[in-house]
Length: 178
Image (cartoon, rainbow, N blue to C red):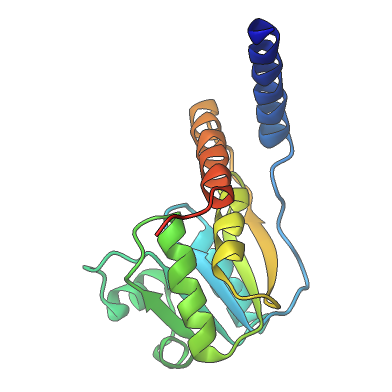
């Protein structure tokens, strides 16, 4: 009986991983939102967010999880962002250190700006976990558009992220004691 249950769980885990790896989220075109959020940590994320901002797909952009050593001028120079755009439309968030705190920092930014829709720009393999954390941190009624940056992840990255997704999902399902 226990052997069958373990076999079933192993099979479920394996099929879940196959689905996770084979059906990575895709970019989203043409969806305007109030804001864009880009968690740091993967190539192409910030470039994608800035492109969408230049195309007026949102009013402003939060880059969450920025290293405290990064200065706005350095960021602007690295990504060729005009000073006027930095001043009006790009917020560098320094409070987050992981995906969960990216979500909390984003929720505060949305609240400060009274935004009701958001485009999440992150790497395809990171999208499901980032969106789950974000959606659990946001108040009801906020629309989240998922816009994945395509990548060619190694098997090890996929395996690690799949396990993080499972852990993150389980952590959100378990009531927090206080």
